Image (cartoon, rainbow, N blue to C red):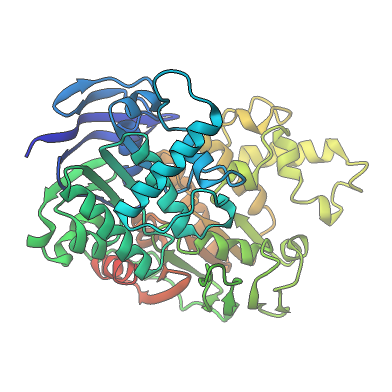
Length: 506
């Protein structure tokens, strides 16, 4: 078959971190080509290059067998490439037709806005009928379900002229029946001559709907195979790595202590028939690291937020040893009880980039009164403590504790977070993707700090989409999918068994 889209030898880095290293991909007209891999494998980055959102640092991009160079998404749209992102790009207060109008090509000659809008509404009805979508062009987007919004995104790129359709994790937020209907629709599009790229982590979607699958791991292309001819176990092995038994990080240590944190029946309100957290049960013991593996978007962030005290509408129980249920306890009070938190978004949730290094360090003690009242802080004491912490945790790049935290590199920003959170010998540590985006040295330092906290008697909950990180650190491993913990493994744990649990329930 003739090639529709081809990327060869693609390299891309962000802030010195290599996201893609010599990546390759080729999709043909008339096929559904799945791009499979764990979160962080480079799938979305590679397709963002194809869609003109990122520029590759090296490599070649070909469309319909012609070499092209995109300066932005408009160039990709002119090449008839359309991408439906995992996080929809719709103006929620606009109607369906108004959203489609934003990207639809203009008619030749003069056309009034009202006439153009009527033309777009007619085109939406015609295209929706052809695809089997039930969409009212006059309906506001914020009144549509998630599945309906996704259909609007697909209509938007098709009516903009796309013949190469890239769908990034299209079934992540859909029910099983919605996902089946969507994938059957895009499969029919491919049969009519389009090229469909299905970016996914779900084996069932690949096996049922893909003609070929390219597997990525660690920013590299691992293989391109026929999914119908390859057993699921082999696809899992290609996706998560060799099926080997990883050494247990805590195998030579003493038996963990009593239950430090017990989460029981934790759930979030139902939205459109689904709960992001769906009756979570979890026990963390003193002196252990519990690693929670899983593909992002399955409730991990919401679980972290609930434990940190950022989910006012959660139901269930979060019981801390010696203090009872903390579900309605404010976040500052939880910190006073010994909770240390390393959130996934270090710049959005852990640090205030516009404040100084000293202020970011000292804010963790403001509620304790260590630096006096909030309206008259003892700046000298705060600066002295910050300097000591910067030295103890090797926070490099801080020329002065008066320097803004935003000027620190990712690794050193994370070290500052660790210095603040571990400065009081925490009883409970919540670490969500703690080494994401860090280089090898900085990541190793983060891991050493987590182990040290565990060895000092803390209970550590490690939430990570990096299976290597989980296996390297965890004393026990859980797998989270669709808002539930669906499996648990004692160390030493088999990597392939964990990977299978992740995809079996996806």
